[in-house]
Length: 335
Ligand code: AHR
Image (cartoon, rainbow, N blue to C red; front, side):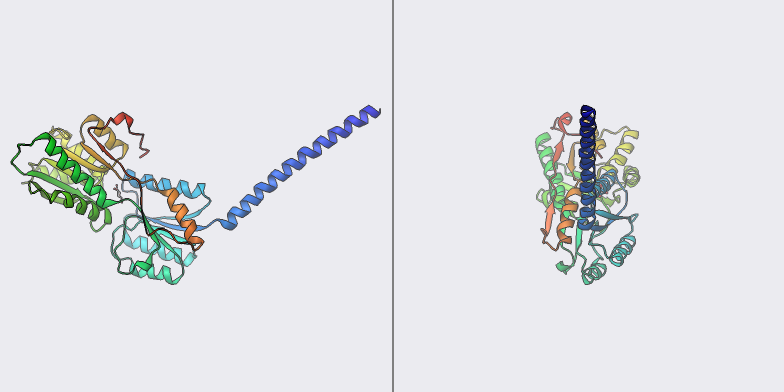
């Protein structure tokens, strides 16, 4: 009988120990959640839209990083309208978020709404595209890509390409430029960086330049128009993004042209489809524009919410892929 009692007692002790362990685990989990809620911040983010695979990847990166880092994200899609972005920023101010971040669709026209944010004591982080302002105190910092450098890389590749391929060439090299959204910082920066390099060489001539608004459909439409126009004889296409480039390639393939061989194609973003075209020899140079900076946005937003300083300017790491690269060695892009 004493043995039986002992057995019951040890089962009871074991049950008690396991129960206490579970209870304490749950408590720790609850405490963590409470801490997260206490320390978690609210970030209002205004995205410009979903115009390209690059943009969709940028949005995925931001949403995933917010979820992972316990940031409560108020996300707004402006559907390519600056006015919608201004309205979204005003609603973030009314909601009294901890930090506001946004991608300015164009560079000008932000001073008034940013003044309202500053007056409300809400720090602002500018991402991906830059703004022009005379009042640098209107935002805390910028994180994104270096558009001027992307344009310079395009120019450098072009100069090298013609130097290598045809040293005896006397005709000008005729360039078509399809640029991004008018007034946007990447369109301005890429155009400026490209010109900075080719203006050094008088044999390079931009014979036609038009904005394709970063849209595949517009790249396609503009190339159709060019091929029926007085500009139809050209040597190079410099396209400010892969979406437009893919639209251009569709037209060229339809017409039996030989992009990548008879016409040099330089493009920016490094979407998987552009890397695949590089592998097929239909594109000569792809300059990376890196969209995956959601985690850095969250780190910066948390610092701002604590009242800490952040760097004024942070450019993300970007690479250049050319026809000389082994495409197989380029990691899958995810966009
Ligand atoms: O602002 C970055 C640019 O916007 C990317 O190059 C383009 O694809 C996007 O839509």
